[in-house]
Image (cartoon, rainbow, N blue to C red):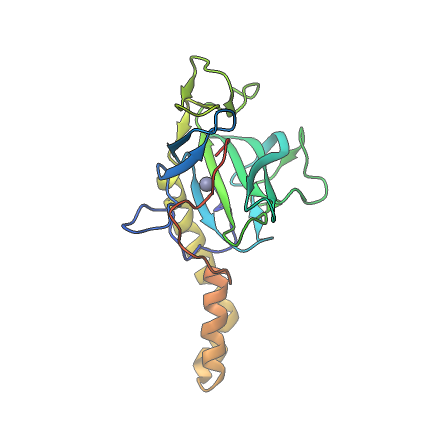
Length: 238
Ligand SMILES: [Zn+2]
């Protein structure tokens, strides 16, 4: 079983839902071509796991860091430019892009180093209020020499017209994988919670409300999220 990449389950779902914020795989993204200035609507190639800035991110499996951290997404306005980063990791079952992370990585986590499943390998980056882990999965773990997106229309990349980049054609929809890992995390949190808080629950009283609040924080973190139609903002690597 792989590890869910966050310490809690985001309150904002990564599933498609009517009127949702577009965190799901396949969500439409407003896009402006960097060279021509032309506008278009592209398709989101990841699931966004909404979480506060600096939330630790866990390696989903044992792995090897192929590259990064590299600049991934610039957002906000000219007055308030902010940039998030990404790392590409070769795991047992996938190549994974952990995107929209902070440039600061834990000590010892760097390109061409191995990581252990469940190890903290990054933190959620800062960008314009809505912050998240942008998780992309690619099926062919042996294609370590090839970038996950590039600016040329090679045949083994999806052309994303009229964008000035291409996306690798072994891209996977992470939704079902995340659902499975979520169940595993839910079970672990329930066990930890029971061990920690049961004595207080049995006593009842004013402590009870605190216990409930703490439980909620453990399960969902303390982040907030303002829905919008374009969860990532314009991007050329998204
Ligand atoms: Zn995203």
